[in-house]
Length: 137
Ligand code: T46
View 1 (tube, rainbow, N blue to C red):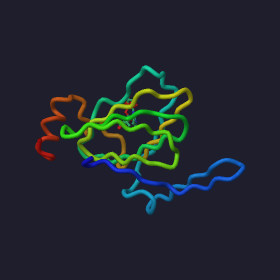
View 2 (tube, protein in one colour):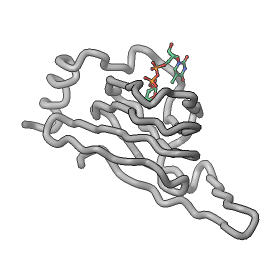
View 3 (tube, protein in one colour):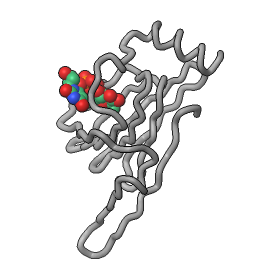
View 4 (cartoon, rainbow, N blue to C red):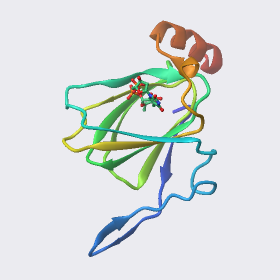
């Protein structure tokens, strides 16, 4: 899907559990300027419902599972994140919804920019106009 990709993170597992290191500057394909995490989300709650104009983000479900629905107006894709060694890279102009959080699920997000409300597209119609200009369709 355009402007969407996956990153496989190295991990070290043994009888004591797992460890996933993330080296900023080499493991992530952009400069990380912000980190946040989302948790304690009830199963029937839907988060997101927006796109970004320029922001790149990597979503890693470090505990439990989360279903992410992505839409770039040409394609729509549903992805279950349930592996703490997989990062979902979402670039600009991709509408995202995060839902079906399992009990105890935690979603870690690495972002390319500081928080900036003016980078959000919260109207689907406005997003659709901009995405169609970029992707066609
Ligand atoms: C995204 C998905 C995956 C801040 O003050 N700083 C921040 O860095 C963020 C991300 C949020 N906020 C404030 C803004 C809102 O008052 O936290 C509140 C909840 O944010 P929002 O409703 O945007 O959360 P989600 O889960 O719908 O979306 C978030 C990110 O905002 C968004 O960029 O792609 O996670």
